[in-house]
Length: 170
Image (cartoon, rainbow, N blue to C red; front, side, top):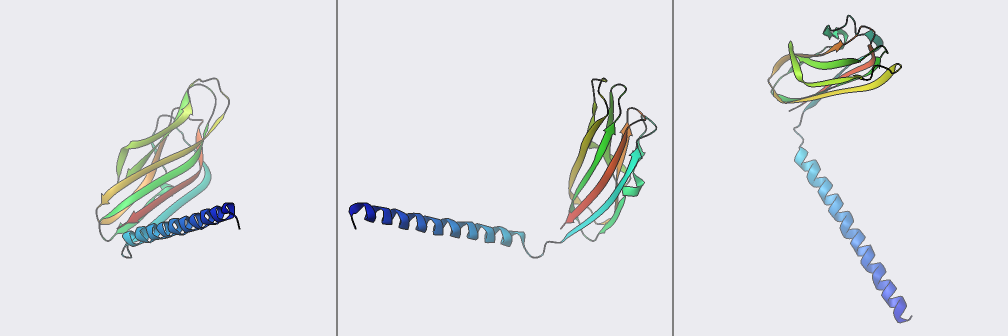
């Protein structure tokens, strides 16, 4: 074998060894992440769905989606993540939009809020995907209720395919 073959062989060995080292680092990092999560973590999830069409009417009125209320109990303080998704249909006829907010334990959260709609007033019917998310880092133990509030600028708008997801982690 000539010098070229020896050099190529050495390069191959170095690349193979580098791959082994990289694989070990990836495996070791994954184990470190899994160990830091711990076995004592308690995660619970709740969902509510409604795939019907909900007319957001009358206009300029805050409506509660009572069919999407999630009631749950925390036995100790926990971090709580909540997510609401739906499709919104904004009908033509001027500037119009749909607003969505969370209501937690009877209190309306003004932030975060999501708003979708048209602003030019000249479009045909518009379809939007709506996503609203919120995280409460330290919700106290006890019974809790989470629901969604919606409002519309006109009474011809609607939402559908609604999903409310809540997850707690201690």
